[in-house]
Length: 65
Image 1 (cartoon, one colour):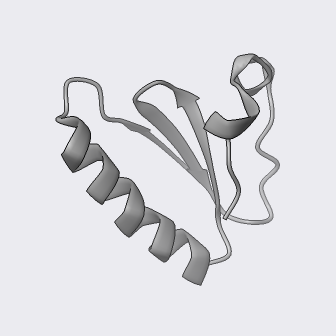
Image 2 (image 1 turned 90 degrees about the vertical axis):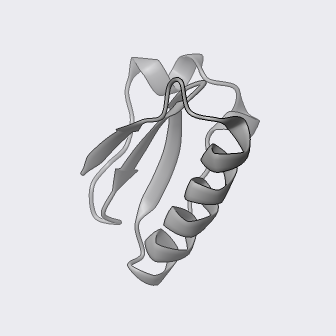
C-alpha cells in the first residue's frame, strides 16, 4: 500500500506518472484512488480502500483500476 504525494510536481509529469502507475496497477489487479488534488492511494486488490478522505472526493476524482 502506497500513498503517493505529488504536490509541487508539474501537471504534465503527474499525468505521465499516473498513466504509468495505472498500467502497473492494472497488471497487478491493484486499486488507485485520488486522496487529494495531487496525492494518490495505491493498494493491492484485496485491500479495502475506504475512509473519510475518499468520501469527500468527487466521484470522478476517485477511480479503480
